[in-house]
Length: 299
Image (cartoon, rainbow, N blue to C red; front, side, top):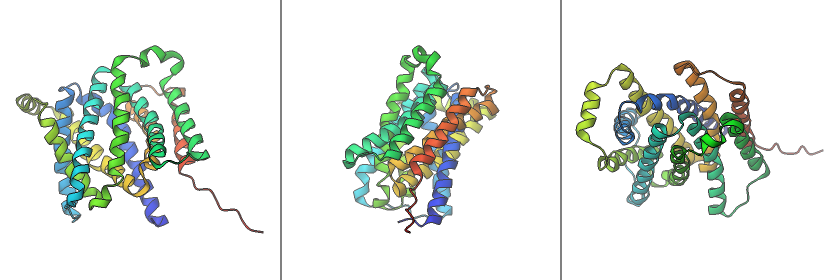
């Protein structure tokens, strides 16, 4: 079991990851204007693999995994590649802002329901309260009272589908430490993602994009590949192996607020009152789900 000190460090790491994910939404929006979704995903995973490989080698992390881990690694990489395809398709064809909220407010709910069915357990009272607060946060962030028709647009179905794919993926990464280092599992998963996407991309066009890319393109590609996926997502997968997929997924409620703040800073988007209310409700949801009940004092 994790000591309190290590658990606190892990929580700090998850919060950092969620902040990076929040910034990734406006960054991905910028990248989507340079190339088709699959090509962006391919380039991002290639950069991610190289960045994580250098990082783990410098940390002297063992890179081997057991042969028993090869089947789940292959499946996890396929789901990761599929998630990225859906993610960038949603960015391209849906509403990026609404899509970000759809994914981040439904992912914890789906993860907890899926986990409770698999483990055959009932959700605790604080988990139910936290999930309800998270959904309420999503309602404020999405302004459901005025955007109900917009949310049903076909492009946003990519985001909803990605939620289901991410939930299944999280179940695989939650068991990654059974096959060796969870960090090594993530590294080889990124490499296999490059392999899967290789069948769906135009390499010649990718070379053209790389040749014509400007500072904005390479800056966002490095951020998405190294910081967002390489560091933040790897920390998230590591956390799933320590805390479980459900508990770790609850932190995703932080992402919409971070996305709104980063959109304000980098894209000059205004912060509205409902964004503040929704963001605060999301933070409360994370606290409720992860808070521990204090033991009763004996007289």
